[in-house]
Image (cartoon, rainbow, N blue to C red; front, top):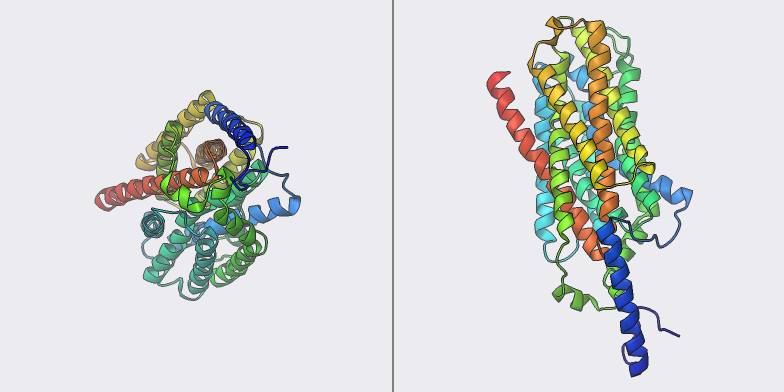
Length: 423
């Protein structure tokens, strides 16, 4: 009988030879899966409770920022910055990238402690929401809270995918859907507050909006702590054991990153750069109409289709298999819909068509863009799961998230300069 992987190497020569043969066969099988893009076989079937916990974990990463962004129609109408506030919030979000930059610098030589990082930033998110509930009327404080919420979201793009990478595909898909389901729920709260109301008469104020969001944020963080902390820390502590080597040996024998991983990183850069330019574009897309109430309602429905499209795109990955043709097709659709968003933001669309037509067309364009975005992001991270052992997958997924956030940062800095010069 063959000894288990990772057992002592002081066996007889015959057993050692058998182990070497089995190891070579296992490596060849893994290489074939990586080359074909097939995910590695799941170690176990996920329970419904575990999938639900990953849904809530995914929601928690961007929840605080989603709440601030969902309140944008109210802020644009009430605060003196007006339409420029969308760009200011987008820029403050990207300032939050300082957090993953520091994290990557600290974990350059060895994998980081994902549990501690995620737990710390969950606390930061709750603090930011509570502060917004009290001091939202002060634009500088609102923007500072946006920086905090942005740091939580940016870190989630780097750490969450790495934390779930070694779980079954249903957990990865659940967390991905949860990330954007939080945005849809936040937009639903905003619709309850503003839909069908006059600009000056919302159903409830921002204070109640943010307090409820802070309670939900705390609950989401608790779901991760209860279900995933022990599991993730165990994976971090035993990453080297999968190869039958000691942690010290892994430190000095780091395999090269597969070439396909570099294409995935570039894809993340493009997708995130366009995605996080959209909050700058959308207030201008909706702002061409003279009635403030019309512009507020149009922006609200654009946000509804934005989050609905993102959720549906991520759910669609259960039916769509990742390959080069699918990737290129949806990347073209994402680029085309983003170009239409830029055109309708720059040009005065009120001269082209009426408000009644715009309230159908512009949200539909946003929905198509975010459907493409949600599908592409999830496909890329599911693909990355089959590119090596646990430590390699964690490094690749962290780098994908980091490249995506750097794309978002660069695109938003460019958008900030353009808005400052021409808006």
